[in-house]
Image (tube, rainbow, N blue to C red; front, side):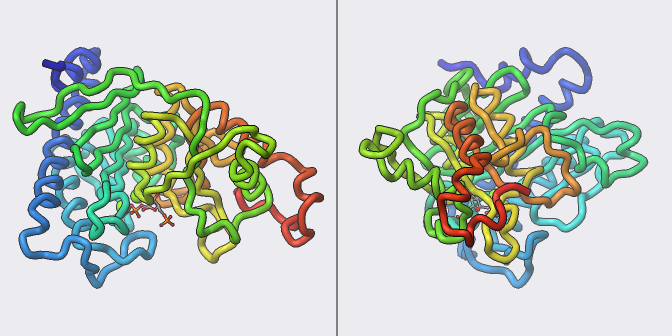
Length: 347
Ligand SMILES: O=P(O)(O)OC[C@H]1O[C@](O)(COP(=O)(O)O)[C@@H](O)[C@@H]1O
Ligand SMILES: [Mg+2]
Ligand SMILES: [Mg+2]
């Protein structure tokens, strides 16, 4: 029998009261994830989980029924965990909870909303940050700290299996929900991202909106064995960040969601605090890398809870290679002058 998540938390997070609170918080998040999973399995008991509600979230996206159900479930978990602040994709402002809480949580309660009604893997992504007295005096500043400060990060995937991919700063670990056992058991200790990449993951329908650097990179992958990369590449894109990230943890590859020229997409689509930062920490802890094309994601100083960032992550060598494409000034001259004007990928 594999060891339980509970046993892992007891051994990994027992140095002080702060760590024990993080362990307790992860247990509460797991309880919420099981509720969300059960709701999905039951199909919402008559409610259309992928159906649109009238409201829109912080980003202007129309909320789906399951976005709201998940937000409520994880807010309750955050209350039960004595978090000081709860910053959610689904709420404009962070919610203040326990005044003595030592930690804050930034969360995407339901990732992959566009896939809800298609029975494709979706998930929940979270990031746990420290709270200082300075943050208590100026609560907004708690979600203006860089991702390098994260104490723990992870995501749940609601797919064929309910999985938790977790880091508390000592590797990236995968836990599987076992209904028979009634909890999460370890599936893989210390996952490592393969160093070589044969797959890329991007929404190719945006190709025409990308700048020349990104197009050059993709063109070189598409050229396959006959092109400069001298090998064939596959393409996989689920459109749920959790699923794309987990595949890359399992078999390497690279994910790209660059900024592009569409209105509102100059910094891409993904949110720094509750999508890019936790995924970046998981990747780095697994030997991979995550950047915005130029800068390490975890070093970015966010202006606020809901900021977006271009995102590249996965196999380290491939992420570094994309960084070189991004700074290749010769590429601009080679292509149409139209694309020489600006580099939209870079903030
Ligand atoms: O549909 P697009 O533009 O390819 O965007 C897909 C991305 O958007 C997301 O669905 C955004 O997350 P939300 O569903 O939480 O808004 C990611 O999971 C995914 O990587
Ligand atoms: Mg998301
Ligand atoms: Mg979401």
